Length: 102
Image (cartoon, rainbow, N blue to C red; front, top):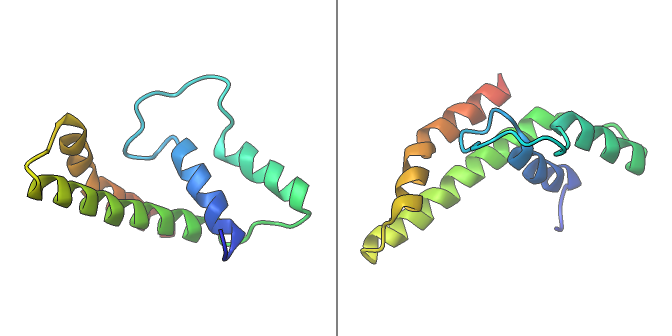
């Protein structure tokens, strides 16, 4: 996207992060966050600075987006198991974002 490339990297890594509140399983063969960042740094020839802040931002943005999706589903009367699971994850996402800043 247009903007700081660390944000795109953080979006990808957020979904790989073992502490993400939505983690269902830890599959073997999937690269770790550290491996992805190291590969990015090697390919780009730069060190990724302030990465925790970018991960926190993506967790906060995912929380806001998830809340909006669930709110709209509730307005339409179409809340299903996926929405209920995600609504239960909102506070954990926000808490995790704060931990990443810590």
